[in-house]
Image (cartoon, rainbow, N blue to C red):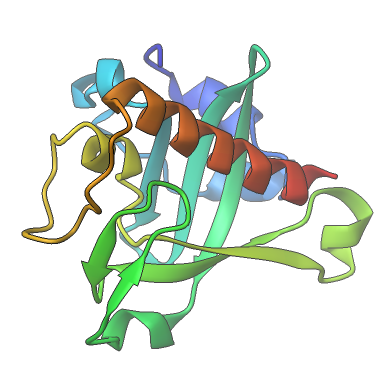
Length: 163
């Protein structure tokens, strides 16, 4: 993924108003992010820990989503698997819920998926971030195939939000 600017990020949100996108917290450390290892940019809002955001490039356009996490998921002591990158965490996978884009979202419709709570799926897939022994299933897929699967899972989730 190419480095993004705050302006690009704010203009890419599809499931919130322009005013909400203008007010949300964008990371200040964009220049220090490991862009070469990111298939999407994800972060949590430090001022509102139940809010998260992600930005991905799909079909040559940026798409950004606002997400809310379930606080109940963070206390789980049993291992759970991220539906994007298929990494298993103990207490690190949360139900992330995105308002649907457009009128459906305005009516309160949402789409949810279990995701890594820190939204660092690209780093887990590449082995740049580790959650310990047994966190990844033994697979015969190459890293490139795992990356493709993660991107496909994310694209499917975004499609559900934007349809």
